[in-house]
Amino acid sequence: MEKENREFLLDLLKEKNVRKLREELLKYNEADIAEFIEEIDEVQTLAVFRILPKDIASEVFAYFDSDMKLHLLNLMTNTELTEIVDDLYIDDFVDMLEELPANIVKRVMKDINPEKRNIINQYLQYPEESAGSIMTAEFIDIKKNMTVGQTLEHIRKVGMKSETVYTLYITDASRKLEGYLSIRTILKNDESVVVETLMEEDVIYANTFDDQEDIAKLFKKYGFLAIPVVDNEKRLVGVVTFDDAVDVMKEESTEDFELMAAMTPSEKPYLKSSVLEIAKNRFVWLIILLLTATITGSIISKYEEILTAVTGVIAFLPMIIGTGGNAGSQSSTIVIRGLSVGEIELCDYHRVFLKELGVSLVVGVGLSLFNYFRIIVFGGSKEIALTVSLTLVFTILIAKSVGGLLPIIAQKLNMDPAVMAAPLITTIVDTLSLIIYVIFVSLILI
Image 1 (tube, rainbow, N blue to C red):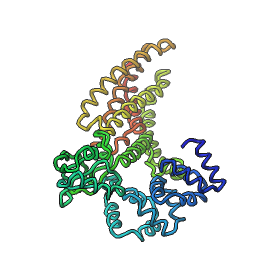
Image 2: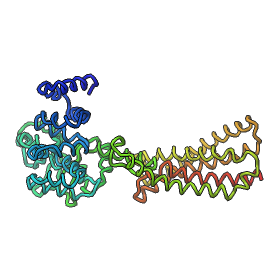
Image 3: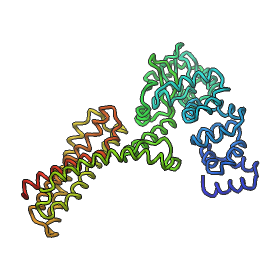
């Protein structure tokens, strides 16, 4: 929503011109309406929300963040609450319940019809971050003996209650998935044509217990608008839609960035998290990294005589350690991204190692030559220049190998590859580069 349009709506709100405000709001997408309501004063939110038609209100409600949903639910009457939740799609309803306090959940569930309550309870039993937890039960399934005409009539009856109508799923009498059909195929064929002659039997589907990140990868690979979800007996129980997959991608990328920055992933957006919550998410990791950094300190203490025996040697230590950490972070970032988008598989570890080995040799030799002549130009001795340059070659070689392989090892151990990101790899490389430097100082300068 443009700034001028938002200001115009705010003016209407200040003037209490409810009829005109309602008329203008309905010109916008539900997501834009939700954004506008979230930005106005909390005292006015329910009043503005109430002027929306019932069907639009439910759509808008689904776009609110958890804090706004909780705020409105606390203010709504039981009748209003029932009307809103009855029109929510099952997956949106379940997502909302998982974010609400127990007392609000009890109030919300009190007047839900038994059939919907059973479905919701089933969804809540699926593991968090599984396909079952993000799927919706509102889809269109048909039988293969139906005609195109019967299918169109069926779509007219149930289509408005379905989250997606673009793909139709064919099931047998026991609801086992047999195939699928696009709405485009239905629309281009005569009404007398039987579905069985048109349907595609090679169905890409997910299991209810598959990880949600794997589902997101399927969307990326195949470009689907929806993916069917089956139970262990291949009975169709729901579908995951593209908008849910986008939400998963956003969640996973945010989690990876936080882990790569050595922070515990947060459940809330940054601006809505308290100072204590943010500090708690960072504090533990900082303590761990602080303790691991003592390893570097102990090595410096142990070899202090060697490092101080030759004048000027210790001055190059920050540059060597920093270069190693940066080189390792480059490799880990690329490999973590490759693992997350499916470009790199576990079986590619040897290819990753060889590629990073080649890159590290090119980069290491290039930086070492540059650094050798830099030290000479600024008055350093050839022996120190050689020592520092050789250390750089081996440091970069190890840093890029470690940075490339550790994320793959993490995934092999069923850990998030992002855990093996910049801070942890930097700590490991710092220790190794220091040991290498001490060895070369001992061999060449002492």
